[in-house]
Length: 438
Image (cartoon, rainbow, N blue to C red):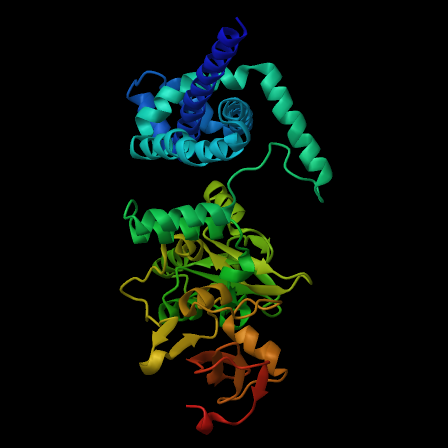
């Protein structure tokens, strides 16, 4: 009788292990499918009337409502399955049972409950996500499980430094970019799409100071100018909008539109002062995020803003075109005189514009030029030189030599970047050695 009972218990545990393996496989499939399903695809499935698409769309819109509960459930199932497998293996194989249980969990469980279902979910994202939407929705509505997961997240946030994450951990930007890299390598997405994804993510962290035209490059007209004088400036530079200044560049009193000038010139008002035609200027702080600024430009219908520094002075100006170029790259029309930001030279040498951003330079060089209170290559050289640059001045960093190739006034306009044959220990600055470092 005891033998029959023992066999029955072993069979029950085996059945329980199989059931848990099936559940783990199902939830692993659901996790992969739902995390890979994007909102636009879910909307398309919903509009196509696919069964379960309404539940899927709700899940995709609010992943924090289901993901932590789903992950917690998978952990519970895996823990229970591991415990049952270990107990059953010890009953059947004795002391060697622990080793048998380890082999089962590492081999069989990984193949049939992790790799296989997740691979199938990646290959059939739509079908897997639609199938998983119903069970996962029911799981997310199960209050005890949801409260337990939320309570454990609260404990994790309490023991971690800082404020933690109220909704729990999700995919970071670095993980998302790594996923995009893998997709590009597997030719799931095009290389151009990978670049656009990077630009969209970087766009959220970019501030107006990084994309503005600095005050030294601004073209303005004085408020005392006549329409005819301003027309000459506009035609010479090819701008459709130009700031109007009162007492110097720090006193921007408005923005002059080329179409207003042309209308006044057509009406015979070429001797009228431009101050009467200037429209109100929009001002933004240099630390304003460009993602917010873009929405403001769209909502308030303006294409140019004057960037103000912390002291209230004019730091530069930013245009709608500059913001769009942060996402799609340079936009050059038939009237633009193209001055390349990066110019490849023989021997792996690059000649770059002094306004080239440090992060862009690091991406092109695959290097690690230091970041700090400066945003550009020219600012980096000024900081390390400690004096007004002259043509030929050098700055060395890990593996690279930066040379001031062209200096206009007090500004470094072109920089030659040369890879060094061996890493240079320490940061050195050298003046007047252009002939020794071509």
